[in-house]
Amino acid sequence: MENRNLDKSGSEPPTILKASHVNKFFLEPVKFQVLKDISFAVKKGEFLSIVGKSGCGKSTLLYILSTMDTAYEGTLEMNGRSLTGLSQNELAAFRNEHMGFVFQFHFLLPEFTALQNVMLPGLKLGKYSAKQVEERAYEKLRMVDMHEHALKPSMKLSGGQQQRVAIARALINDPTIVMGDEPTGNLDKTNSDMVFDIFRDISHNNGQTIITVTHDQDFAAGGDRIIEMSDGHIISHGYENQV
Image 1 (cartoon, rainbow, N blue to C red):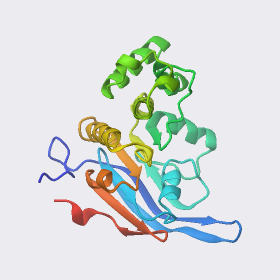
Image 2 (image 1 turned 180 degrees about the horizontal axis):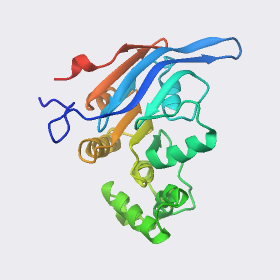
Image 3 (image 1 turned 180 degrees about the vertical axis):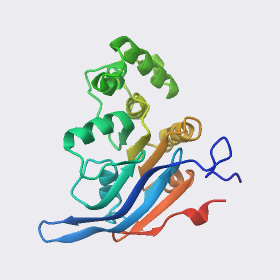
């Protein structure tokens, strides 16, 4: 088996995300530590899954990694930039440019077409003209084989089709990292396999990093690395599974 730690040039890819000594407490109804001294790094183009039983802290960790939750101890770096302590406006701008998100439920606007839904983050970024954003949106829909449905209202699409549109939306700004929270949790096996194939393609061929929280063992096993959590701790970094 190939060493999936190496990039196409055969060299070690750079670290794209680093979490150091992250601790997280819930304060209600009583103080409770949900994340306990979490430290790990993720490489550019790596397809990483975080697994563990419900309540182990994996979704809480994902929300910290995504910068949506800033009430934690420790430090978070992405693209060599420290994100800990930045203002909410700075974090929002960083997220829109460098992160894409795919959730268990697609959160598409039902009256908007697939194309309009995909365009929204691109228009918000303001880096390209509306015409360029539209062209990029068609390109991303083509990547997930949904370009023929571009002008359909999203509410007219099947669940699997809606999730593929949501992936295209996550990709519109060419994010450094795509984060998924149970991205196949609401899908049958056929559609789950489609989502997996898309994620593997964008990580291995586009060099975009994938970090997912999942209960889908087959989905996790097909990626590059699995981090396993239990009771707020990382109990396996997954390196022993790589060849």
